[in-house]
Length: 268
Image (cartoon, rainbow, N blue to C red):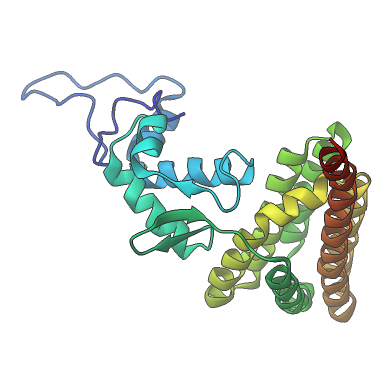
């Protein structure tokens, strides 16, 4: 919740100073450890913090796909005024996570499976381009950085922590697109990723998905590090299409599990 935010952020989303210096006052002492982090939070805009919290809630399923978001209720839940929530809604619409319907309100986007298929196909093409490009231009430092992100995924997979794995997974792919150095691609890519977040969460919950996905990521970095452009591009394309296949298996498994429950209710 945002109710525990530092008092240095006011309800309008502007940072406030903790104190003012009086003329002739003695210089202040050096900041104690940790104050830099507090200053960072205080300098952040409140709408952005609200947006980040809503993104987390949507991804975690606390705000499920298709649900209506009430501005006043969200503001009360997060302990903020309605203005930052309204701004966060607009940003979330631009990122593809919610939709604003005139005279109806704001809803968490519900992406049909047919659209998810289309997004996976488009992502596969973009990722292939990224893989080829990085294999040609990535520095040894970039490769070490990507390996470190894969290691974060491996640690989360070993613990069975789907939330941490998904966060590390998104961070890995986002960083690769950043390193590719195409700003337009980055904006498009991030929207596509946001639209798939709920599908990907369900996919990774499926048994055996985390180790398989981790191996694919390790292979991708190996190909990039070796400078094999075609192989790196193919590895990324195959990874995205494998993710789509895992999504369909997860949906089929969920449907099969729900069938006995529906039959039981009908027989009563």
